[in-house]
Length: 276
Image (cartoon, rainbow, N blue to C red; front, side, top):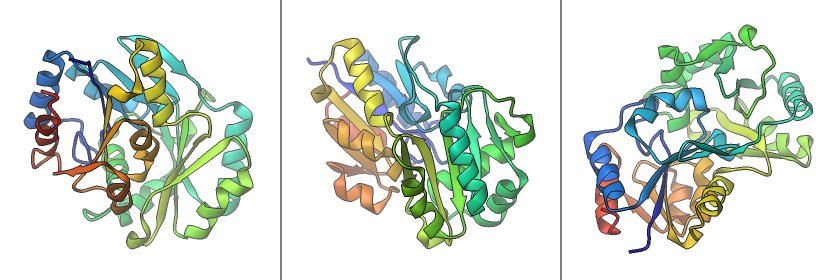
């Protein structure tokens, strides 16, 4: 049997948004897949500090910070934060455009009261998974610190929220080469949220770096996701599966769609594709 490398987004895929506890069906599927000889990786936009609670479930590695921090078998494979110049340019433009933001280092995340208040008002139960995750994480104070606590450590990703779509759409052009702006499908909620990252790293490059490190071809990879920040991961993997609660755009490009994680969707898909 060819060993499969299975990559799982967290929020809205492995767990309900903002949660750190996968349902029993998902954990059972992961264990059985590993017992068969497959390897299972977290593949997430979360920074290392925010995904720590999930490491107790013994994954084979992580693609964190949307591909700019990667570990495999406890070894660091990629560690590429933004340069200081890149970070400063992004923050200056966000301040100029009055776009809310949260900056993510390896050790923690830093946000301001404007963003927190915006989430309290807008991240209701019908919001997209990224907004729900941020509301839950901030309310539970899981490594989410005030912006005043930031001490200048390297930043891997910047989460953005705007009450108008136009400033976010124009952001990538104004930033120029070297940046990628991922915009979520959020028009229906009355605001636009997304992420700003280095353009040379994403969840897809994270998958490729693990394949290269292990000497396993990308043809043996499977990816599960639910939102547009999973796009590169889904495009890179040989088999891409979108969750039932996922973005309609992502469902259209994925190879298959499974049920939600609460419905046992991961376990059913693992069974369907002989991963157990």
